[in-house]
Each structure stands twice: as C-alpha cells, then as structure tokens.
Image 1 (cartoon, rainbow, N blue to C red):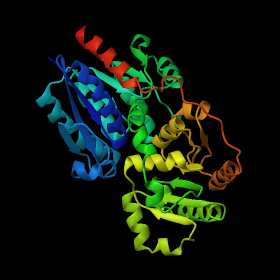
Image 2: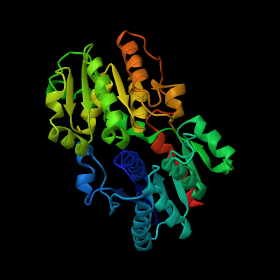
Image 3: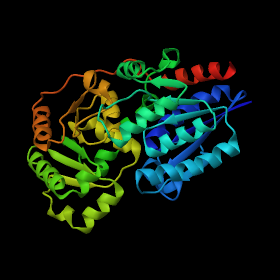
Length: 365
C-alpha cells in the first residue's frame, strides 16, 4: 500500500486538504492518506477554534509552529516535519499554502527525496521581497506536480521553466468545501444571532498587523467604518486576539450604534455573513476566493493579490492601501454600481477528485 501525507499550515488550507482527503477515500484499499496540520497555537483545538462547525478529518500529526521570525518558524517546522517524515516514510507529500511552515515542509521533503505535489501552485502577486511571495516561488521550485486553480498560475509556472507535463489545471479545492456546506450556509441563523434582521450591511474584516496595530491605519479604518455606518449597518469582524484588545480599550462603547464589533464566528456563519453582505471589505487573501464563488462584492485593501482570477473574472476589486478609495467603492456598491462577476473556470466542486485521480495514476507508475 502506498502512503501519502498532506501538510496544511493554516485552517484555510486544511479545508482544502479535507476535500482532498474525501477524494482519497475511493482509493483507501490502495493508498493511505495522512494529514499533518502545522498551526501557530500550542494545541490543535485552539488553532481550529473558529472551525468547530466543520467536519475536519482526523489529523495524524500536529506541529505547533508558534510565533516568531520567519527564520525561527521555518527552522522549528523543518525539525518537526523531519520527525514526521522519518516516522511515516511517505511515497508522496502534498502541500497547501504559502506560509513559512509550507516552505519548511517542502524543503524537508525535498532533501529526503520525497516527491512533492503543490495545490494552488503558480499563484503570484508579483510583489518582490514579500515573504509569502518568496515562499510561493521557492515551494514551486521544489515540486514534482503542480495543481493550479487559474490560468495565470499556469502561465507563471511555464514562464519560470516548470515541467509543462506536470502542470494540471484542476480548479480550486476550497470550492469543493463551499459546495459541501452550501445548504448549511443558507440555513445559518447568523443574521438573527447578530440581530441584523433584514437590514442591509457591509462586512469588514481585517487581520494584517499593520492595520490592527498600526495607529494610523487603525484610525483610518475606524473613520471609514463610522462614515459607512451612516448609510447602512457595518459588521466589523476581528480576529480573537484583536477583538479582546479592542474590548479592553472600550472601543465597542466608543463606536456609533451603526458599527457592530464582533469576534470570530463559526466558519459556516462567516460564509453566510459574506454571502448576504452588500459588500465585504477585507485585507485577506483567502476571502477573495470565497466571495468570488459566493458572488459577493469584495473590496480588497491590499497593494497586490495573487488571486488574479478574482479580479479578472470574479467580484473582487483591489484598491491598494487606500481606505478612502475602499469607502468610495463601498458607497458605489450601496448605490447599485456593482462589479459583475462569474464563477471561474473549473471552480465546480470537483477539483479534489481531479487532483487525486492524477496522483493515483502517478503513484501507480
């Protein structure tokens, strides 16, 4: 029996790996699929606290990456990944994500001469010296198999000299998960739980350190949300640590009644909140994928994005680090001036099936 081990360095990437795991069930007599989750928290339960409503498959290994410099995280993860690979001796490693831990897994597996497959290969933001961009490029250099979710990724890999015979356009495994939980999302009571009723609202979610802890950016975000709240309700969703800090500072009492401050929500409720929002303002890369599939208007406050298809085809608009522009776009959306979008090619809920079919054929050979 062949053995495959998948590494995921964030809950979002673990979602994609969970879809891959479901696709492997068809071949369980021939292939044993294991999962290793590399999370920041000391225990896996804390790392996945906002995903308790998701039926994740059982993980065989958990690595506590911890917080620290890029070098420290990479080094710690490499040492722990080596132990896992020596114990399991897999025939293939699957990587998802562009975190330091993902690169660490790739380097370790490569030096141990274990073939590597990369989900979401070829994505590029073209932002020189960005740590995540460096991780994306270096991880792809180490890989034997490339599974891409959009045409820009295929072009990037070919331009960089990757073996065209090993590049597979398979779609986005995250969509497989969204398809699976679509009915749960539609039945979510999150609007009632947040006492939104039938009111229109804008959803804001920021997690970048510069935005939440940089005084200038945070003040700009506050001013933007306050002004938008005169036109409709604003739900401001914060990461757990940031939410606690804001409450400690009494920010919830200083905000106008039109701005609702909230900590993390269960994933299905979060999807429902995005799906029903007039607009989503974010600095997150993964939300661009989800909003495009959900057909929700997305305003991304970043200078670059690696999810090019969400701009070219989807509902995403990139405004740079310009909060005034983000506000203007949000106001246009509230007036009915929306960006038309469609679901990208191959985002059909069958990406995991395609990926596993390719890997089974390669493993057999």
